[in-house]
Length: 234
Image (cartoon, rainbow, N blue to C red; front, side, top):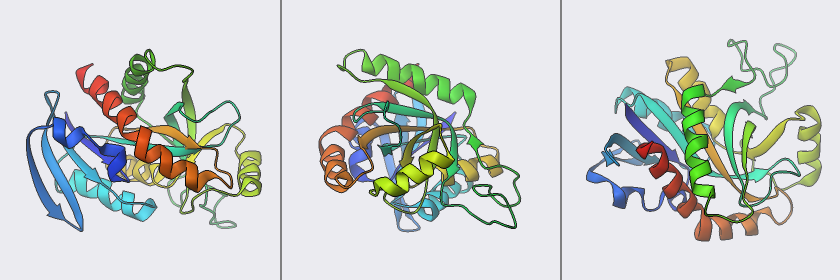
């Protein structure tokens, strides 16, 4: 395995580079890719920046230029379900581009020419990520692991009315973010196993921006570091 670890923001990946054995960094396409070993697994860490295009470019580069064989995206997301609370963790079983709508040429949400709207994650990787999360949460109070559908779109979700409409269209939606489904499409088309893990930072409402920044700064990096460590040590 050569593992690619992607996050959108530096805070979501803090500590991983410091934990890497023999890190070597390469600048490519306005991004810094750092290769080395994470707990004995050959790895490449990179910040994608924000949004679907940025994430897709980063994932494709990891595979085509840096030869990764598996990808994990770790970061934060807004809750899209009353049972999914701030501080909980969602491991994606599938991802959907919630702003994809090429109708009437294709059904709403369907990625044109793939026949798919929901892109499934790799079952083995998702199971391993879930086990890593479970071990981490043993020491966290009142935090829950969820598995299911995550939606990605090129908009920061902070409007409860828009979220309610989206939830009505996708009743099993657990969380919303801005990158995961793009990584899913790249990995699907290139045949690369992948997983997506998101820590819930906010409730995707009018307070989302303030809650998001506070959570990313003070909590997100600790979650990501320990979950990736548990994943690599499994």
